[in-house]
Amino acid sequence: MWTALFTNIEVNRREVKMKDTKVMDMKNGIDLESIKVAGQWIYEGKTVAFPTETVYGLGANALDEEAIFGIYHAKGRPSDNPLIVHISREEMLHPLVKEIPEYVRLLMDAFWPGPMALIFNKSDQVPLVTTGGLETVAIRMPNHPIALALIESSGVPIAAPSANLSGKPSPTVGEYVIRDMMGRVDCIIDGGEVAVGLESTVLDVTGDVPMILRPGKITQEDIIEVVGACELDKALIKSDDTIVAKAPGMKYRHYAPEAKVSVYEGGTLEVLTRIESEAVELAKAKTHVAIMVFEEDEAFLRQLFKQRLTSEEMNYIHFLIQGSAKDLSVFARQLFRDLCVSDDLNCREVLVRGVSEHGLGRAIMNRLKKASEGRMFKI
Ligand code: TXA
Ligand code: MG
Image (tube, rainbow, N blue to C red; front, side):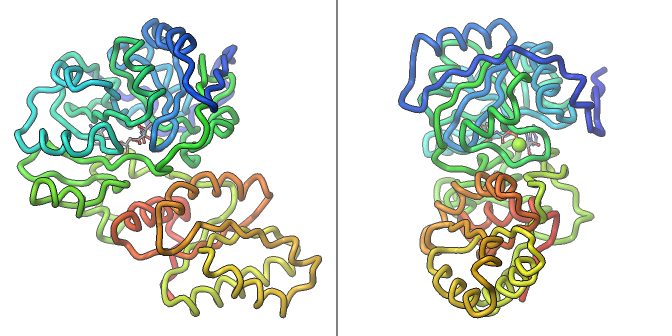
């Protein structure tokens, strides 16, 4: 019988043997010769971190139990947390699953390759270590040339969680993969900044009606448009924390930078004046603080700070601007990176202007809820 190797982490991070990690720089374009080498390594059971359009993945042969242990070890991740299996062609799906419901074909046609992982009943080919002991398996065809070429050249489906240490923000640029994974994996492919910035929508398609277990760029509205119906896991709607999320990964501490994150929701004026007063207090106490707001908010806030802070105190305030409120895709792409940047800037606190939970806003708020460990204030 399958048993979790280490359920309640922390796996002692020093126990991981240091590896001689090869970094492949593909920021300026894909290098097919190097991809061949990395693909061969995956085939042989090694670990390779690579970019996808959502976030970087930490990949290994999904059908090789030993290789999968390599992922759990490198991440310091509990092995009851199932992995997403990445494929490059639809034919690769059939041997991995028991059945493909009719409506799922419509979803695959509409959204693959793309930021959507589908949960099927698994076939016997998929080892239980890959699925965290579950009889279901999450499968995704990523929309990134490096990811697709790597899968093709390895010739096997690639299991890959996000390439961060467990609990940390998912990496969206190569440098944060290198920071977290250097010496822990066999290879890191640096493909520059990703396009989406939040992990894929996880959709359970084992029932008659698809159910979103983790919100992402592909929204409930997008899915309804294609198949007519789509439910949300109750744990995503209710603020009641007694409801356990169906995606095992959703229950762990997540995305947390060293800094304390607080999120403020409400009318523009109320939210900005609250952020201002919190930030002023911190800056006066000589504590670095990051402020995540939209470009429309910056001039107003700077004006307020000018009235209350000296120019020396202003040095403790760091604006991390999330594009315009009219286009949340910038916020989505930058969120994880800027949580890491706030640590680089030595910020003790991050004050965030929340967004309404519609469309992409639902995924952004879902990640912020975890990053803030629930410090969400409605004002
Ligand atoms: O965008 C993404 O999905 C990225 C890139 C690398 O593809 N991957 C990623 O993997 O975010 P990971 O391991 O960080 O998150 C996978 C999520 C977890 O919340 C996990 O619990 C859920 O998917 N999941 C995977 N298999 C599942 C299954 N069989 N049943 C329910 N949830 C599952
Ligand atoms: Mg993750």
